[in-house]
Amino acid sequence: NAGVTQTPKFQVLKTGQSMTLQCAQDMNHNSMYWYRQDPGMGLRLIYYSASEGTTDKGEVPNGYNVSRLNKREFSLRLESAAPSQTSVYFCASGRTVQETQYFGPGTRLLVL
Amino acid sequence: AQTVTQSQPEMSVQEAETVTLSCTYDTSESNYYLFWYKQPPSRQMILVIRQEAYKQQNATENRFSVNFQKAAKSFSLKISDSQLGDTAMYFCAFMKLFSSGSARQLTFGSGTQLTVLP
Image (cartoon, rainbow over all chains, first blue to last red; front, top):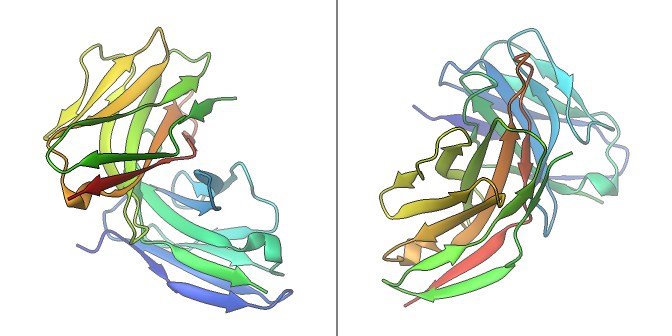
């Protein structure tokens, strides 16, 4: 039981490049989330998916898109990366939106 | 909007001693959850403890316990018998509950870096 997994662990992009961060969970959770963590700050919610087939914006959605591919997988896409998107990205999942969230190991993204 | 404040950016404690991390929050909600998450140098976010606001009894998990003061909107974490492996950034987080069942959002504080000294 791996819990929540994320790929890649680290990525360097040039401004304007695109990439997709992958997240998968094997806990049969319904809800999944994407957060970003900037230095000296707590995590902020980018997008979430309350259940398979639904996605909604969080606190800081601009510049991102998401896809809930199936119950297990929830991807985050940066269409045109900007230096302001340099951050550590965390995926999380929960049994339902009313339940505790469990986090993946994070992806460090550097946009030059 | 909810806010979560952790006023202690850094703290240290001697191994085997007890330390308390502070957290205050501001909300007009009556139903919510509060959490403490731990982030060690590996950067993994690990759930430490959860408190439901409707429960008067303070949550405990082995060496970790909370002092939940709902009226004062205070939620402190006490770590007893501190261990070197407790060295980490600790985040307090708030989740409000909507009666409609719509999605909850975690609001995090800025964190407290705890160092356990040998």
